[in-house]
Length: 463
Ligand code: UDX
Image: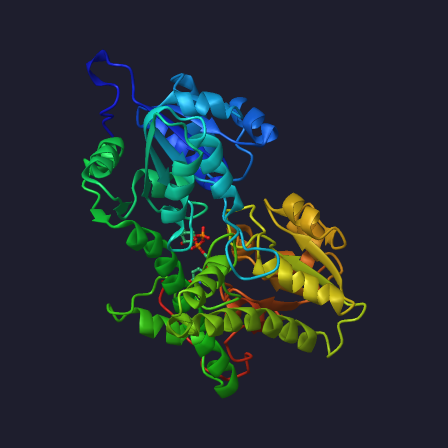
């Protein structure tokens, strides 16, 4: 990719990125790769130290290499100093978290407010503050007022919104090669600045949508709500399949081949989790109610409920397989992260199932290739194994809860050799049911009929 920012021998344009979590660290590193001089800012000195040492504090394939590449150019630094940040350049991205409030479904905006306050109170002259965090519609207008209130008299600060759609596990690629860029702006000047900043990406032919600011804020929650709805739709069909003996995997394949529907995000199983989808649909409902249009997104409560029911249904299947009572039973829980290729356990369906099993008296041993230590911090009472083999030793039942390739590729024979009782619950619908049954396993999967002798097994094309 050509970098328009290091041409003519001119000093590269300077950008600050406030918040160096998933979104911010990735954005800062990618901006440096694109040729900008980048200052990453965070209130957590531990995070700043680690990034400055070239150590990415979370698991994200490809990002450590990109950080090394960016650091080799000398174009990226990290700091906790907001004075330095306010002085550094004229474009400031806000990438801090907007978690769910502890006592309600609404988004907790204290980190975005504090980032804007800290920055704006130190800015002199022109500046564009560009929000990337996922926020309730209307937040940018409040932040613009806040910036106005706290900034020195000679400051001329504008606020714009540029939502980010990156997926964990694909963060670098999604940032450098997004499906689209959305610029929510209130002036032509803000649009011109954003077009300039993103020119290396725009020049690759990525579509740009220029909108007003409320639309840009809404795009993100509307997209995540749609994705969550699609997943819960197929999981609702799984519930119907369970009541009828139909097979949701075949159903999903048949639906997905209709171009109007499409197969992506139509994978049935234990459902969605992570730091975005669950809290975004809840915050959207909370905001819609404040706006008097709660009815318009009331269906998101059902989307959430369907998603949560998959967890209890998984526990039901596991309980059934061990004879109706989990007390004292040993369960190997394969997976803790909310999805494979991530160490993120926020709202992770896998870990929630492990917790529910534990509450029923089961002895649960969790193994996740990357998320064990985060899971241990969240649920210290569960047992953790260092390998798949160690996790299944003496297990009365094995439950596949996050579809890491290590679990998909394990053979039924090798798991049994490692000491597992041959009972498997596939909560992600990814294992070869026939191979397990042929190897003598009792096998149950969400939304799929229990295998019976003589029954025609569904054949599903790869999707
Ligand atoms: C999501 C959005 O995809 C991204 O655009 C946004 O910026 C942040 O939120 P992420 O949380 O990284 O990204 O995860 P994603 O890959 O979208 O998966 C979300 C969850 O849905 C996972 O728990 C996954 O296991 C589940 N999922 C996904 C399904 O259960 N079925 C599917 O078909 C797809």
